[in-house]
Amino acid sequence: MSFFNEIHERRRSASLKWDMMNEVYNLEDATNILPMWVADMDFPPPAAVSEALAERLKHPIFGYTFANSDVKDAIVHWYHTRHHWHIDPQTILFQPGVVPAIAAIIETFTSIGDKIGMSTPAYPPFFNVPAAQNREVITCNLTEQNGGYTLNFDTLEEIFRAGIKMFILCNPHNPAGIVWSREELERLVALCIQYDVYLLSDEIHADILIHKAYTPTLTVSNADKAKIIACIAPTKTFNIAGIHAAMIVAPNKALYTALEENAQAHGNLGLNIFACTAMKAVYTEGAAWLDELLLYLKNNMEYAAQELNAIEGISVNIPDATYLMWIDYRATGIEEKEMMDRLLSVGQVALDPGTKYGEAGRGFLRINVACPLDTLKDGVERIKRTLKSFH
Image (cartoon, rainbow, N blue to C red; front, side, top):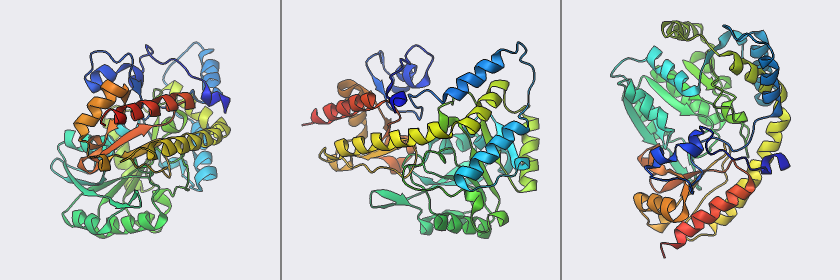
């Protein structure tokens, strides 16, 4: 655990999380702001990553490359052993990230003006990417239940009836960290079959499981009868988002072929040589590191929940998955703009405002707790200082 306690200076390293707060939060000087916003951990990845990259750097030529059978076998073995999901290596397509994969899927299977559905609150690119491609975004709120969320199948069916072409799912869910049950996924898949809707399932957080096992959407009953495309990646799991690497899994041959043609149309040549190297390393040697990470995150979450729930008007649950916590401050009566202004000016801490995830997120904050415990304690004290300033 001492590995995760070590604090690494990340300012002035071209870190989006640490060095872009001026632009993101419209600040003149973010020097004293503690970033707890974007989903980027403050932990180094497994040592195997640096070792594998160092070994590859010994070869002086960095020409065109491809994800060979070693890379694909490592992916297949990882998902089979950790999630009981057997992925046929012939169904994998590579992308530089899950968001580019989402963009490619939307472009391939929908047209300008088509309706794309999602349940909110939702990850911002789910809104932004379809909108940028001139698709119409149709939303329905998740149902709040015991401080968490469930899929609301009544409103879901309404948007299916409205003629959506595609539904975007986050499994596990970002920002609330919900692991959808097999039963919920099967009901959703049944709707997609009934209304002939494409299901795009973003499963990037699948490995970061705190309380529940995750069910891959492609493994549920009748998944083979639906038009499902899943997106997976090692980047969130092992904190290597700067090494762009993600995969689309498309068992349906017609869908796979269409996505392959889209990649060719955009000159997408797959993973670069360092992404191939890092991906093989984490999927073959990263399991022990991840097991320790999950224990560390659970401890961080227990600390944060205990401290934050002691504040009047604040409610937060430990999520099923991810390293993100969804703070409910609606009972304080504080408006979002005032809350964000005080967090930055008084607390000097940067969290994500809930409306970044849609109107359903109003009255919530998203906090990233994937940092050394001392950093988290500092962040929690800054939040406390902010809230005390309202009294």
